[in-house]
Image (cartoon, rainbow, N blue to C red):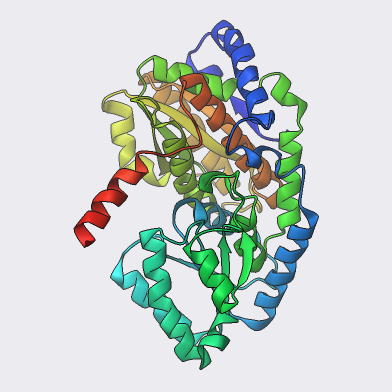
Length: 407
Protein backbone atom coordinates (compact mmCIF):
# COMPACT_ATOMS: atom_id res chain seq x y z
CA UNK A 1 0.00 0.00 0.00
CA UNK A 2 1.39 3.38 -0.99
CA UNK A 3 -0.89 5.38 1.30
CA UNK A 4 0.75 5.96 4.67
CA UNK A 5 -1.21 7.14 7.70
CA UNK A 6 0.71 8.47 10.69
CA UNK A 7 -0.97 8.82 14.06
CA UNK A 8 2.05 9.42 16.28
CA UNK A 9 1.24 13.15 16.56
CA UNK A 10 -2.26 12.53 17.93
CA UNK A 11 -0.93 12.07 21.43
CA UNK A 12 -2.59 8.67 21.74
CA UNK A 13 -0.25 6.15 23.41
CA UNK A 14 0.88 3.44 20.99
CA UNK A 15 -0.34 0.80 23.43
CA UNK A 16 -3.92 2.10 23.16
CA UNK A 17 -3.79 1.90 19.37
CA UNK A 18 -2.35 -1.61 19.49
CA UNK A 19 -4.97 -2.75 22.00
CA UNK A 20 -7.77 -1.95 19.56
CA UNK A 21 -6.18 -3.56 16.49
CA UNK A 22 -7.93 -6.90 17.08
CA UNK A 23 -11.33 -5.17 17.23
CA UNK A 24 -10.53 -3.17 14.09
CA UNK A 25 -9.44 -6.42 12.45
CA UNK A 26 -12.83 -7.94 13.25
CA UNK A 27 -14.54 -4.94 11.65
CA UNK A 28 -12.40 -5.42 8.54
CA UNK A 29 -13.33 -9.11 8.48
CA UNK A 30 -17.01 -8.12 8.60
CA UNK A 31 -16.52 -5.86 5.60
CA UNK A 32 -14.95 -8.69 3.61
CA UNK A 33 -17.34 -11.40 4.80
CA UNK A 34 -19.97 -10.72 2.16
CA UNK A 35 -22.60 -11.01 4.90
CA UNK A 36 -22.92 -7.30 5.69
CA UNK A 37 -25.42 -5.37 3.52
CA UNK A 38 -24.12 -2.63 1.21
CA UNK A 39 -20.51 -3.83 1.24
CA UNK A 40 -20.20 -4.67 -2.45
CA UNK A 41 -17.67 -1.82 -2.80
CA UNK A 42 -15.16 -3.77 -0.68
CA UNK A 43 -14.48 -6.38 -3.38
CA UNK A 44 -15.53 -4.36 -6.46
CA UNK A 45 -11.96 -3.34 -7.47
CA UNK A 46 -10.79 -6.95 -7.02
CA UNK A 47 -13.65 -8.99 -8.49
CA UNK A 48 -14.21 -6.81 -11.52
CA UNK A 49 -17.08 -7.23 -13.93
CA UNK A 50 -15.02 -7.13 -17.11
CA UNK A 51 -18.05 -7.08 -19.38
CA UNK A 52 -19.40 -4.04 -17.55
CA UNK A 53 -16.01 -2.31 -17.69
CA UNK A 54 -15.79 -2.92 -21.43
CA UNK A 55 -19.27 -1.41 -21.84
CA UNK A 56 -18.33 1.65 -19.79
CA UNK A 57 -15.24 2.23 -21.91
CA UNK A 58 -17.13 1.69 -25.17
CA UNK A 59 -19.83 4.20 -24.15
CA UNK A 60 -17.16 6.66 -23.03
CA UNK A 61 -15.43 6.47 -26.42
CA UNK A 62 -18.72 7.01 -28.24
CA UNK A 63 -19.43 10.07 -26.09
CA UNK A 64 -15.95 11.52 -26.61
CA UNK A 65 -16.14 10.99 -30.36
CA UNK A 66 -19.55 12.58 -30.77
CA UNK A 67 -19.92 15.22 -28.08
CA UNK A 68 -18.20 18.24 -26.58
CA UNK A 69 -19.94 18.14 -23.22
CA UNK A 70 -21.22 15.50 -20.81
CA UNK A 71 -23.75 16.83 -18.30
CA UNK A 72 -24.05 14.54 -15.28
CA UNK A 73 -27.26 14.94 -13.27
CA UNK A 74 -26.85 13.57 -9.76
CA UNK A 75 -26.48 14.53 -6.12
CA UNK A 76 -24.42 13.22 -3.22
CA UNK A 77 -22.63 10.01 -4.06
CA UNK A 78 -24.04 10.14 -7.57
CA UNK A 79 -21.58 12.87 -8.50
CA UNK A 80 -19.12 13.71 -5.71
CA UNK A 81 -16.61 10.92 -6.26
CA UNK A 82 -16.41 11.52 -10.00
CA UNK A 83 -16.08 15.28 -9.55
CA UNK A 84 -13.32 14.82 -6.96
CA UNK A 85 -11.40 12.56 -9.35
CA UNK A 86 -11.89 14.84 -12.35
CA UNK A 87 -10.60 17.85 -10.42
CA UNK A 88 -7.64 15.97 -8.98
CA UNK A 89 -6.26 13.83 -11.78
CA UNK A 90 -4.39 14.19 -15.07
CA UNK A 91 -6.47 13.43 -18.15
CA UNK A 92 -5.76 12.36 -21.71
CA UNK A 93 -6.21 14.78 -24.60
CA UNK A 94 -9.18 12.76 -25.83
CA UNK A 95 -11.29 13.65 -22.80
CA UNK A 96 -14.13 16.16 -23.01
CA UNK A 97 -15.69 18.59 -20.55
CA UNK A 98 -17.86 17.11 -17.79
CA UNK A 99 -20.31 19.41 -16.06
CA UNK A 100 -22.53 18.51 -13.10
CA UNK A 101 -26.17 19.47 -12.51
CA UNK A 102 -28.81 18.41 -10.00
CA UNK A 103 -26.39 18.72 -7.10
CA UNK A 104 -27.92 22.02 -6.01
CA UNK A 105 -31.03 24.13 -6.57
CA UNK A 106 -29.31 27.36 -7.62
CA UNK A 107 -31.22 28.99 -10.50
CA UNK A 108 -28.15 30.89 -11.71
CA UNK A 109 -26.10 27.70 -12.01
CA UNK A 110 -28.98 26.02 -13.83
CA UNK A 111 -29.06 28.88 -16.34
CA UNK A 112 -25.31 28.74 -16.94
CA UNK A 113 -25.51 25.00 -17.60
CA UNK A 114 -28.49 25.35 -19.94
CA UNK A 115 -26.53 27.93 -21.93
CA UNK A 116 -23.62 25.51 -22.25
CA UNK A 117 -25.98 22.78 -23.48
CA UNK A 118 -27.40 25.15 -26.09
CA UNK A 119 -23.93 25.91 -27.44
CA UNK A 120 -22.29 22.48 -27.36
CA UNK A 121 -22.92 18.97 -28.63
CA UNK A 122 -24.14 17.41 -25.40
CA UNK A 123 -24.78 14.01 -23.88
CA UNK A 124 -26.91 13.86 -20.74
CA UNK A 125 -26.16 11.29 -18.03
CA UNK A 126 -28.72 11.07 -15.21
CA UNK A 127 -27.69 9.09 -12.14
CA UNK A 128 -30.24 7.98 -9.57
CA UNK A 129 -31.09 4.60 -8.14
CA UNK A 130 -34.80 5.36 -7.98
CA UNK A 131 -35.18 8.44 -10.15
CA UNK A 132 -37.24 10.16 -7.46
CA UNK A 133 -34.63 12.29 -5.67
CA UNK A 134 -36.05 15.81 -5.83
CA UNK A 135 -32.91 17.65 -6.93
CA UNK A 136 -32.15 15.09 -9.63
CA UNK A 137 -35.73 14.86 -10.89
CA UNK A 138 -36.00 18.65 -11.05
CA UNK A 139 -32.81 19.00 -13.11
CA UNK A 140 -33.78 16.17 -15.45
CA UNK A 141 -37.24 17.61 -16.13
CA UNK A 142 -35.73 21.03 -16.84
CA UNK A 143 -33.09 19.72 -19.25
CA UNK A 144 -35.13 17.12 -21.18
CA UNK A 145 -37.19 19.67 -23.19
CA UNK A 146 -33.98 21.46 -24.14
CA UNK A 147 -32.53 18.20 -25.42
CA UNK A 148 -35.66 17.67 -27.55
CA UNK A 149 -35.38 21.22 -28.85
CA UNK A 150 -31.69 20.73 -29.58
CA UNK A 151 -31.96 17.39 -31.37
CA UNK A 152 -35.34 17.80 -33.05
CA UNK A 153 -37.42 14.88 -31.73
CA UNK A 154 -37.97 12.97 -28.51
CA UNK A 155 -36.53 9.87 -30.14
CA UNK A 156 -33.34 11.66 -31.17
CA UNK A 157 -33.03 13.32 -27.76
CA UNK A 158 -33.33 9.91 -26.11
CA UNK A 159 -30.32 8.74 -28.12
CA UNK A 160 -28.30 11.43 -26.31
CA UNK A 161 -29.37 10.38 -22.78
CA UNK A 162 -27.78 7.74 -20.56
CA UNK A 163 -29.39 6.57 -17.33
CA UNK A 164 -27.32 5.01 -14.54
CA UNK A 165 -29.97 3.50 -12.32
CA UNK A 166 -31.35 0.37 -10.66
CA UNK A 167 -31.24 -2.63 -12.96
CA UNK A 168 -34.88 -3.59 -12.42
CA UNK A 169 -37.06 -1.13 -10.52
CA UNK A 170 -37.70 2.58 -10.06
CA UNK A 171 -39.08 5.54 -11.95
CA UNK A 172 -35.90 6.16 -13.92
CA UNK A 173 -35.57 2.50 -14.93
CA UNK A 174 -39.15 2.48 -16.20
CA UNK A 175 -38.58 5.67 -18.19
CA UNK A 176 -35.32 4.38 -19.65
CA UNK A 177 -37.03 1.19 -20.78
CA UNK A 178 -39.94 3.09 -22.30
CA UNK A 179 -37.94 5.74 -24.15
CA UNK A 180 -34.87 3.69 -25.01
CA UNK A 181 -32.12 5.43 -23.04
CA UNK A 182 -28.78 3.67 -22.90
CA UNK A 183 -28.33 2.37 -19.36
CA UNK A 184 -25.70 1.28 -16.88
CA UNK A 185 -26.45 -0.24 -13.46
CA UNK A 186 -26.28 1.23 -9.99
CA UNK A 187 -25.27 -1.86 -7.98
CA UNK A 188 -27.86 -2.83 -5.41
CA UNK A 189 -25.27 -3.69 -2.76
CA UNK A 190 -23.27 -0.43 -2.92
CA UNK A 191 -24.42 2.88 -1.43
CA UNK A 192 -23.89 6.17 -3.23
CA UNK A 193 -21.00 7.53 -1.20
CA UNK A 194 -19.07 4.27 -1.75
CA UNK A 195 -19.90 4.05 -5.47
CA UNK A 196 -16.97 5.74 -7.21
CA UNK A 197 -15.60 2.38 -8.45
CA UNK A 198 -18.92 1.55 -10.16
CA UNK A 199 -20.47 2.99 -13.36
CA UNK A 200 -21.64 5.93 -11.21
CA UNK A 201 -18.08 7.23 -10.95
CA UNK A 202 -16.28 5.40 -13.71
CA UNK A 203 -18.27 6.63 -16.71
CA UNK A 204 -17.84 10.38 -16.02
CA UNK A 205 -14.18 9.76 -15.17
CA UNK A 206 -13.58 7.85 -18.41
CA UNK A 207 -15.32 10.53 -20.49
CA UNK A 208 -13.11 13.21 -18.91
CA UNK A 209 -10.01 11.28 -20.02
CA UNK A 210 -9.06 9.51 -16.78
CA UNK A 211 -7.62 6.00 -17.07
CA UNK A 212 -10.21 4.09 -15.03
CA UNK A 213 -8.27 0.81 -15.18
CA UNK A 214 -5.28 2.47 -13.52
CA UNK A 215 -7.65 3.89 -10.90
CA UNK A 216 -9.12 0.43 -10.23
CA UNK A 217 -5.65 -1.10 -10.11
CA UNK A 218 -4.74 1.29 -7.32
CA UNK A 219 -7.91 0.49 -5.39
CA UNK A 220 -7.34 -3.25 -5.88
CA UNK A 221 -3.75 -3.12 -4.66
CA UNK A 222 -4.86 -1.15 -1.60
CA UNK A 223 -7.58 -3.72 -0.92
CA UNK A 224 -5.16 -6.63 -1.18
CA UNK A 225 -2.31 -5.00 0.75
CA UNK A 226 -0.88 -6.95 3.67
CA UNK A 227 -0.65 -3.64 5.55
CA UNK A 228 -4.26 -4.18 6.64
CA UNK A 229 -2.96 -7.07 8.75
CA UNK A 230 -0.66 -4.67 10.62
CA UNK A 231 -1.11 -0.93 11.04
CA UNK A 232 -3.34 0.23 8.15
CA UNK A 233 -6.30 0.40 10.51
CA UNK A 234 -4.51 2.64 12.99
CA UNK A 235 -6.01 5.82 11.52
CA UNK A 236 -9.52 4.41 12.00
CA UNK A 237 -8.65 3.49 15.58
CA UNK A 238 -7.15 6.94 16.28
CA UNK A 239 -10.29 8.66 14.99
CA UNK A 240 -12.44 6.48 17.25
CA UNK A 241 -10.29 7.30 20.29
CA UNK A 242 -10.22 11.01 19.48
CA UNK A 243 -14.00 11.15 19.60
CA UNK A 244 -13.94 9.31 22.91
CA UNK A 245 -11.68 12.10 24.18
CA UNK A 246 -14.24 14.75 23.23
CA UNK A 247 -12.91 15.89 19.86
CA UNK A 248 -16.13 16.63 17.99
CA UNK A 249 -14.79 18.11 14.73
CA UNK A 250 -12.30 16.56 12.33
CA UNK A 251 -10.58 19.03 10.03
CA UNK A 252 -9.33 17.46 6.82
CA UNK A 253 -6.51 19.85 5.91
CA UNK A 254 -5.79 19.57 2.18
CA UNK A 255 -2.23 20.56 1.33
CA UNK A 256 -2.69 20.35 -2.46
CA UNK A 257 -5.36 22.44 -4.18
CA UNK A 258 -6.17 19.63 -6.63
CA UNK A 259 -7.65 17.77 -3.66
CA UNK A 260 -10.11 20.52 -2.80
CA UNK A 261 -13.19 18.67 -4.05
CA UNK A 262 -11.93 15.46 -2.48
CA UNK A 263 -12.62 17.35 0.74
CA UNK A 264 -16.27 17.70 -0.28
CA UNK A 265 -16.48 13.97 -1.02
CA UNK A 266 -14.86 13.20 2.34
CA UNK A 267 -17.40 15.33 4.18
CA UNK A 268 -20.18 13.21 2.74
CA UNK A 269 -18.34 9.93 3.25
CA UNK A 270 -17.49 10.50 6.89
CA UNK A 271 -20.54 12.60 7.79
CA UNK A 272 -23.18 10.22 6.44
CA UNK A 273 -21.35 7.11 7.56
CA UNK A 274 -20.56 8.11 11.15
CA UNK A 275 -22.97 10.87 12.19
CA UNK A 276 -25.65 8.78 13.92
CA UNK A 277 -27.05 8.13 17.38
CA UNK A 278 -25.28 11.20 18.76
CA UNK A 279 -21.90 9.82 17.65
CA UNK A 280 -19.20 10.72 15.14
CA UNK A 281 -16.96 13.73 14.63
CA UNK A 282 -18.30 16.43 12.32
CA UNK A 283 -16.09 16.41 9.20
CA UNK A 284 -14.99 19.62 7.57
CA UNK A 285 -12.23 20.49 5.11
CA UNK A 286 -9.80 23.37 4.76
CA UNK A 287 -7.28 24.17 2.02
CA UNK A 288 -3.77 25.02 3.23
CA UNK A 289 -2.18 27.44 3.09
CA UNK A 290 -5.22 29.43 1.82
CA UNK A 291 -7.40 28.87 4.88
CA UNK A 292 -4.55 29.43 7.32
CA UNK A 293 -5.14 33.13 6.62
CA UNK A 294 -8.74 32.88 7.80
CA UNK A 295 -9.72 29.77 9.74
CA UNK A 296 -6.14 29.38 10.90
CA UNK A 297 -6.89 31.93 13.63
CA UNK A 298 -9.70 29.82 15.03
CA UNK A 299 -7.68 26.63 14.75
CA UNK A 300 -4.86 28.21 16.75
CA UNK A 301 -6.78 30.09 19.44
CA UNK A 302 -10.45 29.08 19.33
CA UNK A 303 -12.15 26.25 21.17
CA UNK A 304 -9.95 23.19 20.94
CA UNK A 305 -12.61 20.76 19.76
CA UNK A 306 -10.61 19.53 16.78
CA UNK A 307 -8.77 16.57 15.47
CA UNK A 308 -6.77 17.55 12.38
CA UNK A 309 -5.90 15.23 9.50
CA UNK A 310 -3.27 16.60 7.15
CA UNK A 311 -3.76 15.27 3.60
CA UNK A 312 -0.24 15.48 2.15
CA UNK A 313 0.96 14.77 -1.39
CA UNK A 314 4.65 14.01 -0.91
CA UNK A 315 5.93 14.85 -4.38
CA UNK A 316 4.48 17.43 -6.79
CA UNK A 317 3.98 16.64 -10.47
CA UNK A 318 6.47 19.35 -11.43
CA UNK A 319 9.19 21.37 -9.71
CA UNK A 320 9.19 25.18 -9.80
CA UNK A 321 12.30 26.98 -8.55
CA UNK A 322 12.09 30.46 -7.05
CA UNK A 323 14.45 32.64 -9.17
CA UNK A 324 14.97 35.56 -6.80
CA UNK A 325 14.26 37.11 -3.42
CA UNK A 326 15.03 35.73 0.03
CA UNK A 327 14.00 32.19 -0.93
CA UNK A 328 16.03 32.12 -4.14
CA UNK A 329 16.99 28.61 -5.17
CA UNK A 330 14.27 26.93 -3.16
CA UNK A 331 11.23 25.41 -4.87
CA UNK A 332 7.58 26.24 -4.31
CA UNK A 333 7.24 22.74 -2.84
CA UNK A 334 10.02 23.56 -0.34
CA UNK A 335 7.85 26.43 0.90
CA UNK A 336 4.78 24.17 0.99
CA UNK A 337 6.62 21.57 3.09
CA UNK A 338 7.86 24.29 5.46
CA UNK A 339 4.24 25.46 5.80
CA UNK A 340 3.13 21.92 6.68
CA UNK A 341 5.92 21.65 9.25
CA UNK A 342 5.01 25.02 10.74
CA UNK A 343 1.32 24.10 10.96
CA UNK A 344 2.14 20.80 12.62
CA UNK A 345 4.30 22.40 15.30
CA UNK A 346 2.01 25.37 15.98
CA UNK A 347 -1.22 23.38 16.09
CA UNK A 348 0.24 20.70 18.34
CA UNK A 349 1.41 23.44 20.71
CA UNK A 350 -2.19 24.72 20.71
CA UNK A 351 -3.42 21.27 21.75
CA UNK A 352 -4.69 19.93 18.42
CA UNK A 353 -4.03 16.22 17.83
CA UNK A 354 -2.77 15.67 14.29
CA UNK A 355 -2.89 12.66 12.00
CA UNK A 356 -1.21 12.61 8.60
CA UNK A 357 -2.31 10.79 5.45
CA UNK A 358 0.49 10.70 2.86
CA UNK A 359 -0.01 10.14 -0.87
CA UNK A 360 3.33 9.65 -2.65
CA UNK A 361 2.18 11.35 -5.86
CA UNK A 362 -1.15 12.63 -7.13
CA UNK A 363 -1.63 10.28 -10.07
CA UNK A 364 -4.52 8.02 -11.00
CA UNK A 365 -3.10 4.86 -9.44
CA UNK A 366 -2.40 6.47 -6.07
CA UNK A 367 -5.74 8.28 -6.10
CA UNK A 368 -7.43 4.89 -6.46
CA UNK A 369 -5.52 3.72 -3.40
CA UNK A 370 -6.45 6.86 -1.47
CA UNK A 371 -10.17 6.50 -2.19
CA UNK A 372 -10.21 2.87 -1.09
CA UNK A 373 -8.16 3.64 2.03
CA UNK A 374 -10.53 6.41 3.09
CA UNK A 375 -13.66 4.33 2.44
CA UNK A 376 -12.29 1.44 4.47
CA UNK A 377 -11.01 3.41 7.43
CA UNK A 378 -14.28 5.37 7.56
CA UNK A 379 -16.32 2.16 7.68
CA UNK A 380 -14.06 0.68 10.37
CA UNK A 381 -14.31 3.79 12.56
CA UNK A 382 -18.10 3.70 12.28
CA UNK A 383 -18.13 0.05 13.32
CA UNK A 384 -15.84 0.81 16.27
CA UNK A 385 -18.31 3.55 17.24
CA UNK A 386 -21.14 1.02 17.08
CA UNK A 387 -23.09 2.55 14.18
CA UNK A 388 -24.04 1.30 10.72
CA UNK A 389 -21.70 2.94 8.16
CA UNK A 390 -24.03 2.33 5.23
CA UNK A 391 -27.39 3.92 6.01
CA UNK A 392 -28.40 7.59 6.29
CA UNK A 393 -31.78 7.79 8.06
CA UNK A 394 -31.25 11.43 9.01
CA UNK A 395 -31.09 12.54 5.39
CA UNK A 396 -34.73 11.56 4.92
CA UNK A 397 -35.93 14.17 7.45
CA UNK A 398 -35.34 17.20 5.22
CA UNK A 399 -36.78 15.35 2.22
CA UNK A 400 -40.05 14.68 4.06
CA UNK A 401 -40.38 18.32 5.06
CA UNK A 402 -39.47 19.55 1.55
CA UNK A 403 -42.16 17.34 0.00
CA UNK A 404 -44.67 18.54 2.61
CA UNK A 405 -43.98 22.17 1.73
CA UNK A 406 -44.21 21.53 -2.00
CA UNK A 407 -47.45 19.60 -1.58
